[in-house]
Length: 233
Ligand code: SF4
Ligand code: SF4
Image (cartoon, protein in one colour):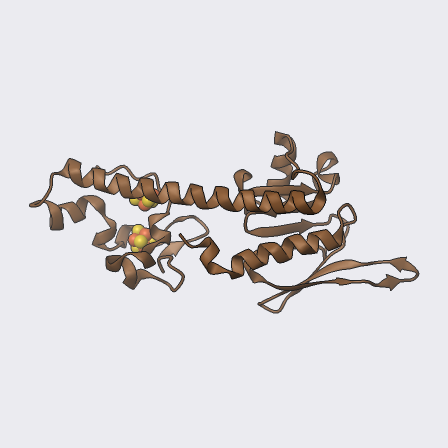
């Protein structure tokens, strides 16, 4: 039996293969792919072209051996995985370089407990360890309840004392950023504001990082995601 580890990569690349193109939901991902579980949403009823063993019996049995057919498929899985790794490491390097250029130090690399707090409390389970670029705000190291995490595709903000400062914005959705220099009752409440292409506006008022530099980082990140060709394989 074909040994699939359910990485989901083939289901996210149906747009590039002629025989799977009809499954493309518009961005190359299969319309039956469940992005929340990273699994096929119609697994029991998936088309025959998605069933390696049945495809062999129906279409390839008379042309090549099962072993040859398996190795062709494993090779394709391997290529997808290598491309994905390559894409991720290139992106990560670009983000880390940009961060260092702006802030003058390498992005924070915390210990296991700090990373776990950031992933569970700030990212709320929506990101993975190897996707983290930087974790900001020292309160993470003490109570883990507030802070900011910059990942490969999103900025996560959670301020324990202010429920309005709690959001996840994908870089690809950031339309514009600006510094709102404001005062309230004589107190400086300058904030970095983000406008998204779905109409929501967010405020980032965390003090432990230069808002202007953060704005530059987010502008850079969103520009990478706007220039599709930089992220295409
Ligand atoms: S790329 Fe290969 S291992 Fe990953 S889900 Fe597809 S068939 Fe399975
Ligand atoms: S139907 Fe299911 S198995 Fe086939 S490409 Fe779509 S998500 Fe993947």
